[in-house]
Image (cartoon, rainbow, N blue to C red):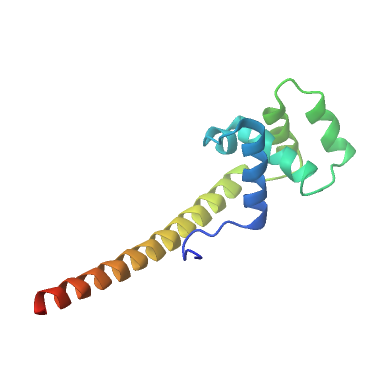
Length: 124
């Protein structure tokens, strides 16, 4: 049965499968922290086949802190980290609200169904 809330994209599902294969479980930190930046970068490069450019690949590959290097390359390319963070937060909040509302609708429907059944039992 398809659930009406939080259907992940194919890429998100694939990324999760990859991380599960690597570690057997996935903590938030594996996606939403420094190591998460590296994991997402590697997933996009290796599994989604998004090509690296030489000016991107070299500083990242040679860095001891790959997450810092990935962020540095993004900043040097002109990515506005504050604007990106605000956009991701907004989209994340919108997605959460949509998922929450879908879940509440399912719970409400199930509750109404149970209440209806209880009312029928009381009549009998």
